[in-house]
Image 1 (cartoon, one colour):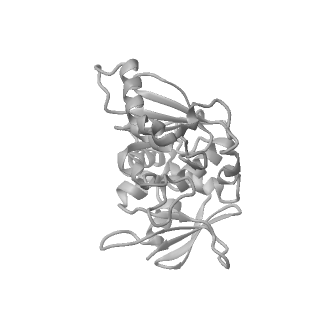
Image 2 (cartoon, helix red, strand yellow):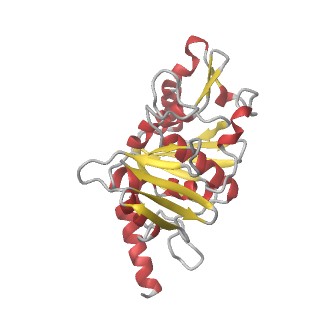
Image 3 (cartoon, one colour):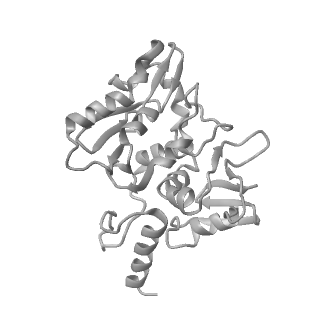
Length: 284
């Protein structure tokens, strides 16, 4: 198959599975669409982010909000995810609302919710620029729905409205602090580099193919005692893909993770492998 045919297949797949218009996609020096553009520190953050968003009310992430779980619900607001060398871009119709759910807040001087170390740099009328201080990684939340009526001032008003609850009942918005606070430092293991970090980062950039195209909502779990691999698991219903099919999507399709392979143990479980990193896929 010629390079031109391969690129045409990837452009079509990026649009169909990832909802990325080829005009928006990053390119290699030869002009081919590039799905993974992150450096090592950006990968560390993207790997953390996918474990936050691929959680559930039952399998809560350590930085989930204490009253009502909201991290898993963020996927319902997304339009597309694009990995660029300088930042991970999340296009959404609710940029300010997503920011309010992932920026860190301190509850009663004890409990941190949201992503520790995440800070708002600045914003304009349609883009909220955030940085994760411990890794230096960038995250841009891009408002897809704003028209000519939206101004930078109006975006600020909207952000203030969405983050108003950060100041209630003695809470403290840690995202307004410039440096990482002492309350956030103990969470460093969440973004520490592991063998499975590149895999998790690549899953983050392909998450729309799992949530939207496949219509499944997997949750991440770290290895339990006696289990060697972290797990990405989900419940299957009639017509939804099993682990083998998602393994094929991530390793054999046009949007595959480069150099990754999948070893199926059955239709409902197997290992996704990249280098020394492994993730068990489990459909039940």
